[in-house]
Length: 531
Image (cartoon, rainbow, N blue to C red; front, top):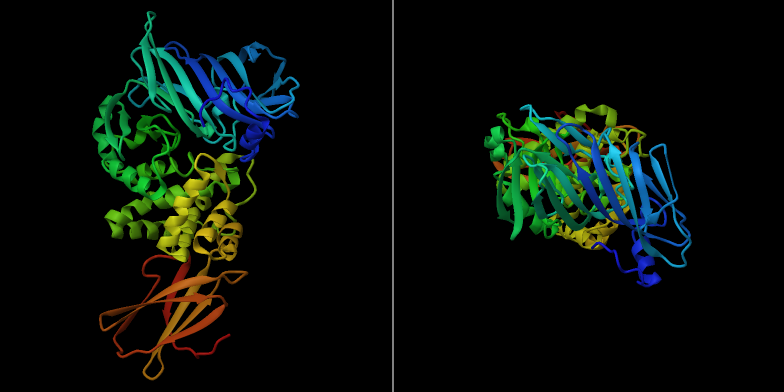
């Protein structure tokens, strides 16, 4: 949504629809735009800053509550006048006047001090001074006042003043740059697209840069420390990734994309239009192009289509993890299958997560959300949903998700609604089994070859307590000729049989790696009786 600063006479009906079609974290408040001004110094980690916030408020709301760390606040203005405010326990409460209708207001906070987190000034691995923002999950308020929750998305502009030797990268296009007379330069960036607060960033360092166009007219740029220029090879498939994902999910949702070597605590951080990659990824022999794909997917799933609450994080991390490897299916299918197989093997060893649902209660420490369930199980839920729907309905569903929830927030229930609408099927069982409950299936497939009865197969579910609805693929290779069958198991023990023409057979279970399950194949004689 575009920044709104002058439309105070818009009808209350339109504004009410704007506020509550996608209700924000703080009831009756919807942040529309953050305009952030920061002055950086070579001699100190302190900043001098101002944040101007345009926000909608409904008549019954009398307080704007912002998350904000313990800075020295110089002034708080509301619509240009000194505001009545209270600042304690990392909350800035600003009293709002009585109004009759839903209106848009503007608050301006001027402050200074050293950020305790979020905006980090430190030397890079070459000993050169840098500044990088690292907001995830709720660390943005350590350097600017905000509603630090992904539910309340907004557009952002930044005015960064820093020593002239720095180059600055941030969300949105560079609008202007001016060299000041004091040895500093001022860079102004503005993004019209809404994004979660944790994606609002900038970086300042002595960068080398390269740029090109991709996915039509999208400006794609690379920012790296000069001594690590050779590591740009990890981005060689980026134009193809952008073209592929744009075709799958819709046009790239932000005005530009910068891929940046940075001091982030994560391997990669998907900031909107400016992805930060850990500096340690660069300069070594190992490729991190799967990470590159993962973070590019986040531009759609996470940044543009954002989970409404932290306990729906799998809609971001699971989707990015799946589509981050699914890109390779188009160019190297064996690599895609190998990545799938490795992810399944890794998850099956991480048994502490197996009994926990994906949509659990939000933990006290949000970093605990960075776990095998939200990433790897989430990946597998997307993969199994694709297999359940079939490619046609699945990709239609992904397009429909962008059309309905692009620029907004969504939940697991919204995903189910979209998939059911596209496929015409009821999928409550699938989401209940794989998302809202724990338990990972462990199946034993026993088979016996009988000259008269053919191939006899018993499939037993060993997980506890409940049985699950499981599509199991059985491949029979008979004298080199392959036959693929899919059976659906709903009971603890089920029996199946197929005629055979030869005794020269081989059995493969889940040949195309489509089921998240521990699978054991046993050749064994048994009595063919259904339970």
